[in-house]
Length: 386
Image 1 (spheres, rainbow, N blue to C red):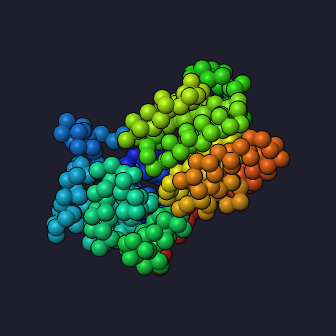
Image 2: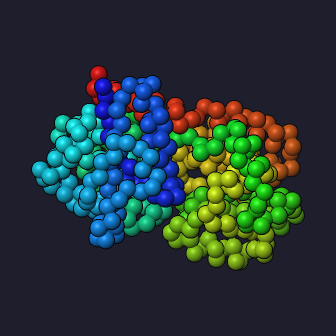
């Protein structure tokens, strides 16, 4: 029987980004074990802070699972150990029960001697656009190149990212499998969860129409261009809409909030921090348009979530975003605020176009699911041992 060990270290209490992928992959793989006839193990490393405090317990969201393996060293230490030949690194697979596959989920994989090694590379922002990432993420280049020396297979989340990995890291295309992401929502989510929620904790007046953005507040997401487009729409076309930005503050977010303060319509621009899945779904479902002018994405999950929940989408014509959106969105040059404003105006002023985008978006969203992602991942594992 195939035995797989997946690294769950990126999993945080409120998972987003890599942690969101890891949580959903593990959860779905765990449920597929009997059907697909394989064994799943989960390895976890403590943070440096917890390690120093000798807190080596598993996070709560891993405790429902069996076959948990604790690697009692923080990632910084194992990355250092992997930088030179070290017998301790090779002994990890013994502690994991000698799996067939070891899957590193965060731009690195353990240097095991006998197990086949699989590594996730989600995107190459740190190589292509280093000005859009912080100092920690900039160090990923060396980390990835080092792990590629012993990696048997790379997983990534879009054909666009696959091509970047081929072009910038010289990885052979046949060593790269694309396993797309999926939404945290499905078509029944609104009926089951959101309509039952009677309380609006952010006290937003949903009777006011709005343009929606959902993601981390950081430079790569190109929010300043969205604010500029909003200003143009207010000034030239006198639109009634508010602009709602949902997302936690990332890094270098100060210029974005300065841009809000400079807007003559700053009282109609609302930043809402971390919200529950139910509340985010409610905002998606009632948005007149979802605008996502990001400069670069490995996948662009908010676009898929918006389509799933019936929001018409305007997004960038760059990186993976056209691949995910297909013909179910209006695509714009993310550097051109006027182009963005005109696309938003088309959606909010043309009810037929808006209806078409909503219907196409819902059909497009059906192409993606976590079960499909998990099964594609299993296919990638099995390609190494056939």
